[in-house]
Picture 1: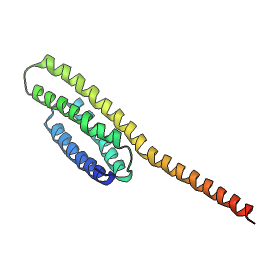
Picture 2: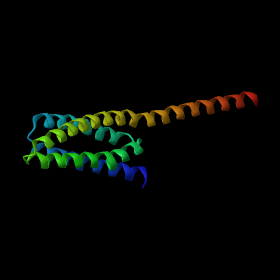
Picture 3: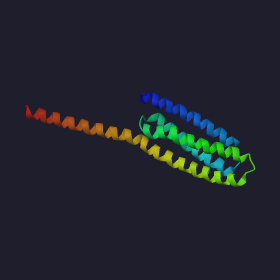
Picture 4: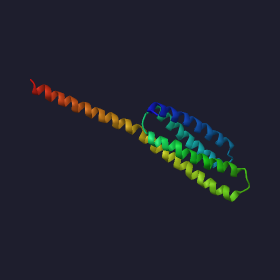
Length: 146
């Protein structure tokens, strides 16, 4: 899969996960969880928008979409099932786990958002240095042959 196909896949996955999380948020009764999901969705939209502009960070994005988000979905599903049950002790445990996971996701997305432009900035810096070295070499060669 080339970079453009990978980018398209990630953009599609982002849209699907955002819609899924919005639906979950609508079903949840707990205000604290709803608020944390809203914060996570805001960060997720920011990440999706950044992904659109930068073609780097595939490893981090693959891990995010293929491992982390399915894990979050599993916890979200468990929470939704428990919220409609009468098992308040288990609901409290899963609520804490979900809140912690949502917070970790926000942190993970912030890290990925820092990484995405860095690869391209590094590439641009390397390109500038290579061009400067080539120009210096050409200048020395030109002066040598005068």
